[in-house]
Figure 1 (cartoon, rainbow, N blue to C red):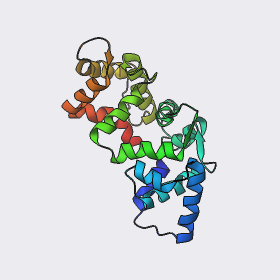
Figure 2 (cartoon, helix red, strand yellow):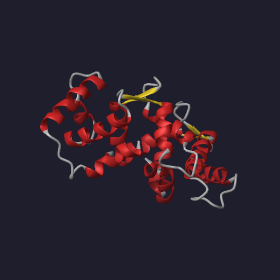
Figure 3 (tube, rainbow, N blue to C red):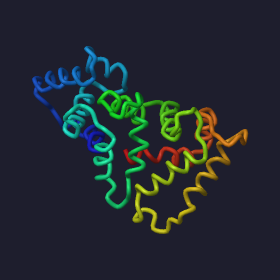
Figure 4 (cartoon, one colour):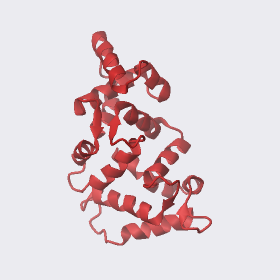
Length: 215
């Protein structure tokens, strides 16, 4: 959904006729299945009404039906990483946005998550990142889950970004992360352990939030 996010940078240059804004607002009410539509999204996110309108235009252009399934999401995402394989990372990212587990992302799901990533507090961003890594959603991150995400990121970035990447590099990174995060050495990382470790280690925080740079 990088093209959708990119539209935010153009907001000060774009001016639409008021009739278009009214049409967008009416369509958003239908897509979100809520009578409040735009006003409710403005209250639930850190975006202004104008920013939401711009984001919705981009979302509607890429997803005319108002919802996006996983295959479409992967197809869109792959276009931004032609030198790598973004399919697995897109899969995990899709699941993080699909908070209702119904196999599709509505505009509301997308924009609420995006608001957290771009405008949320540090705590909110870390919590969102934790849930991305918590693949089975049991409230913990184990080594296998973290390895899957890290490997997916490397696969997505491709050989041109990591020319000397060896097969055991993701595991080495995960071992280093766990050594710092798993304070009680029980083999899993809780949300609080995750947040505290990232707040204490700037390098780790940058590594764990790498996905923000590939949104």
